[in-house]
Image 1 (cartoon, rainbow, N blue to C red):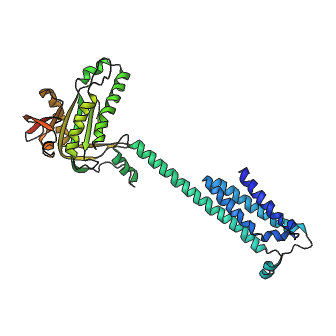
Image 2: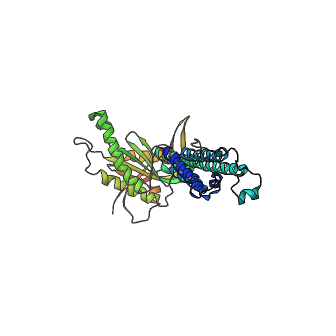
Length: 346
């Protein structure tokens, strides 16, 4: 604030000195084009992106010019040189009060317009930063694609609006986790789970999948919902194999290893925000989701790590992976038998 006032004082002091330099009456300096530099000084303060600096500079300039005019009027009470004739004003050292009033109004108007523009620009910037921060925070709890839709939507996070799409569901669970959790202290258990989730999240996201839920030690991920993926079946199987690779040999405690079982199935699901009040979350529902969870559990019976449903195999080009048929199973809640497979890299 002090520097802006100092700039105005120095400029007005320079303008004031013109009548001394050229040996003219004080009214001479009122017509100096150097006055335009006041507008430059006001505009320069806009670079601080704070309307308060623009206002302080503009108000200082207006007050300063008023004092310059008053000085002219009072310095010689016997001859204040005021005129109402515009031609006389333009061709002599006479003072036209209306012209000086216009200068002051122009200074204040430019100041006001710049300050208002800066105020609106700051508000837009803050809103943009807040929206970006909200999107980043929200994407930690719901898929990023859903977070962007919520941020950009005028309605916000509205529950009850589901979308039906075909996707490949991947469900993981840790073998014998209940027994393992009894051997670890609570803080060590949470630390181990966070490490485990960070490891398996990598292959899922790298293959285009979206983690919809963390359920205890289980993970529910979807491919092609809500993020479009034309090769969702292949990418889900690839992610399952990569999960086994990244967990191989990783120790989550003193001699504790997590063996992860995976179920994979392809079919139609309903995806959307669910919840009540101010607490909502994104999830997928449907028979195919339940089937995937049951396929994961079948790994215990077959001594396998990955079980893939025939619906997923039908979507994958032959020769992409080494599938081995396990047989047909009847799954509770499903009218038809399901042919299941395990899979390895070629």
